[in-house]
Length: 275
Ligand SMILES: C[S@@+](CC[C@H](N)C(=O)[O-])C[C@H]1O[C@@H](n2cnc3c(N)ncnc32)[C@H](O)[C@@H]1O
Image: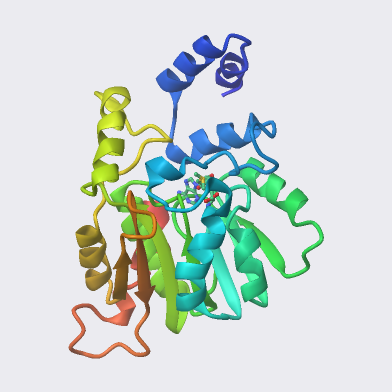
């Protein structure tokens, strides 16, 4: 790993890019590298650089994207939950909007470097806790302890097995009636397809690169949630027109007629090391 890091840190940026592509490891490790080498590039905080409103299909100026999503999606669906869990909080772009909505926010990420940036950014906030994930689930978080789960720009990158496992975990940690907002790709939207085509070249004959998008649709999300007895309340495809934002709710109670019953939800997390 030390040799790999030394190669990545070589001065020539073209060579650096090439090496990164050749050795680009898992999605989580790729983002850890991104955070380690982030030096305040174009914006004040990590994440401020993801601003191509046109490519995303957002009808507001780049610096208003978070506010726009907050006003149109987060606020109306979440209202004011007590405890919010954010999966893949990155540099805290959305954390800033989520914090005033709750009493406690649990910011999680697989990247130590991202969490370090978060601690610096939100040093003055007493109601935020941090948790390093291992990418296998949410296992340190107790069952039925979270009112709302939020994740943006994470499920676009992780693979279907991870998406399904996280949904199963979300079902486990949410209180009955708890809600989740999950942003993921919508490959067959006009802009989603453009993004897919752009990912074809760099992805050929290799494992998934950290920054490429997963092939995902509202229909797959509908099927995953159905199989986990979660309720997909809405699939929003007109706020960020390239992608989909799924609004999910955990039922208040599981019935014997549910397609799957409560004990099967969260099963993967408990046995995750054996996967
Ligand atoms: C593109 S960034 C998005 C960050 C933030 N949500 C935002 O919108 O600005 C993706 C984030 O997901 C994290 N990540 C990658 N794989 C993950 C996984 N399996 N579980 C949780 N977080 C993951 C990365 O470390 C990174 O912080």
